[in-house]
Amino acid sequence: KLPSIARSITPLSYYVPQIDSHHAQTGFAPAAPSLEMFSELIAPYPYEKLALIVGATRFGGMENSGAIVFTQTLFNPNPNDTISSKFGVRSGNVSLIAHEIAHQWFGDSVTESTWSDLWLSEGFATYFAGLFIQKHEGEDAFRKYMQKAAEEYIAFEKRTSIPIHDRETEDLMKLLNANNYQKGAWVLHMLRMRLGDEPFFRGVRSYYERHKNWIASTEDFRMALEQASGKALRDFFTRWVYESGHPRYELSWTWDSGRKGASIRLKQLQAGKAFTDPLELLLVGANERRSITVTPNDKQTIQFVSLPQAPTRIEIDPNGVLLKEVAAKGL
Image (cartoon, rainbow, N blue to C red):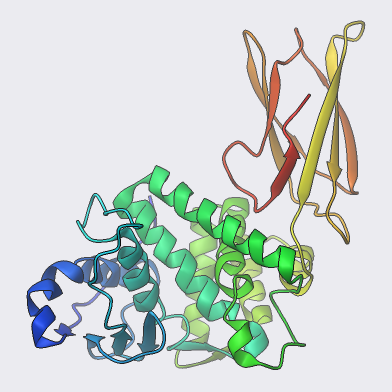
């Protein structure tokens, strides 16, 4: 269960073309629950009112403070999109509306101090939209949302391998990419999984309160999480935010009948340095399932695990905690 704080009621209004007036209440159904959830999870809504407007924008949505403008095609049918089981509208619109409302806190009230810190806006809005889906649509829908985000980032990274904290790109429109949106969301998810819900959200709230109505940097966010959790996170931020790429694992194992155990070899195939994030492995046998944690310190890790019988398969990160690729799941 996600933590919550006290909230206040915010005036919410919709402005749509007359031809779409009958769609407004249904089409914007996720808006009030999004506003309520984020007001409870982060801090009270930072502005006097919120207007949702269907109008002219070159983007799917534009997160102006207190007045979000959505594309004129917002309510158009899309046969390629599924329908939300909770809200009865396109699933893409659920995440879009939640994303833009999350920006009222992250991007509007707390604004990134440099363009290199853009993920503090777009990554946060992307992940908090995922948290809204997790609460209202369920765990399976959330995992699908995060898996799609991973696929979109990985496709981007294969074309352009750059850090999230990008100091080199001069065309600012090119910063609206899967690094700042989808990988940024995954960085937040991995931090949440590593720290636990209570320290993670306490750190997010502390970061927000310190910087609301002002600007913030990636280092400001790192320090807020460190103070909330008591854990050092510099190495994590260096590898995941200031450097490029993601782990690409290849796993193999051999059975030692004499020692009664499996010798597991985990390789990282990506360019650059190793990722040292703890990695769960699920060893599945005919009569046993056992989870172990491997903590790499190099691009190749070998670990022996005593077992009563040979495993039939070994699953890497079975709970989807890490942003990764898997070249082989076991031999």
